[in-house]
Length: 281
Image (cartoon, rainbow, N blue to C red; front, side):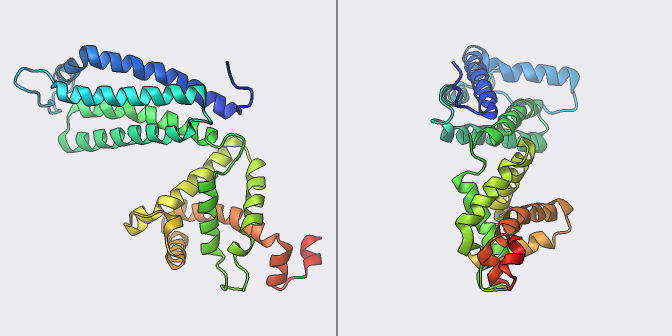
């Protein structure tokens, strides 16, 4: 029975998790019964239709070993259980979903890496199997992950960190984003509630991109919200001066969520020297 309290996005994701649970369970059973024959079969297909690709190296007896089969079965059991738990009680088991996404992301990336480095069809098959599963799950999860809300605690923390970097206390004027953090985040939630699901998902994706940007632009294994204030400001300057327009556009879009709520405050108007009556008119 579908929980009437779920949003449409949550219902779609719960249905996908229900389908995924059976799909992963059937795949696990297939691995158990015929898993050691998958690699030899793909090698036959590769040699017949893609002779330029290198065959996957097999043991002397021509079948893949049982050691790797055990690891595959354990992974399939885990993601089957996660999918079933999420389909039954999405909000109660929502923290399990990122584990599933991490599993599929890692397998997709490593399959792709091994295909590029070895040119073996078997790894491409794995990438083209797990890749779409990861993307579909991610696309459905983004709008569903917040339930009735539009920003998680983590996303609010990221937005507050961006706000502090763009509008630091003691910068152009004494007041900073942190002085009105609660009010600004409340207004940001209101702004996002007026957007269509696609726009909300886009903003939430940009927040997540900002959070992992130190890994991409600084080579540091640390999230944006964990950087020191001066490091955040320096990274924002990199975004603003980036030669890539999509990177600059991400910052422009997030400035909307930061600056509109900030400059709509009566207290902020007084701090920057405007007459509150004119601002609030």
